[in-house]
View 1 (cartoon, rainbow, N blue to C red):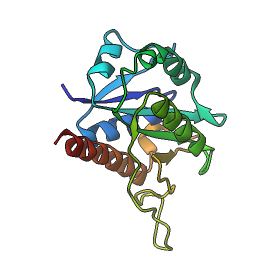
View 2: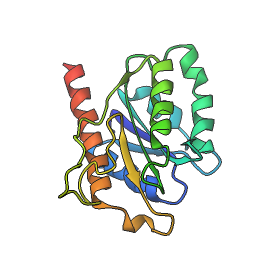
View 3: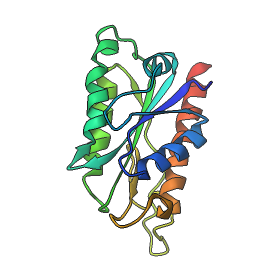
View 4: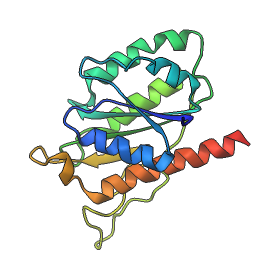
Length: 184
């Protein structure tokens, strides 16, 4: 079992694909939040045992999905005893528009991590911002604080940009590398 966990909610499958890419990069365990905002049985114990927690949710109306917010509110029990203090944290999100207020979701994740006394790991990938860049270039959306993805409203999760998935994988790899350095 991995000591890195990806806690995520996905409404239409796009964020789930990102979560899988992050988990592949970090060799992490996936922990999905269901449609009612609940973790699977044993989920809280998995998070408690993890050294790193990576948050993921779609950006809806300028913030994470309500299902993720329900999980965040329920995390007040471990917060009260500082159970997640000094764990590593990171985050990723997806929305339909190129901007889509994704940074507000990443900021929400960061604030939640800081409230828990955590240590934030940013993306560490320069944006693809030259004329040769395409939608399939890594970090085309240009995030720094976390992995950002864009999926048009009429695109299925199988049509996601390869660059977004590569960026998510890179985030997972960076969290795993940071966790290894801290473990020394």
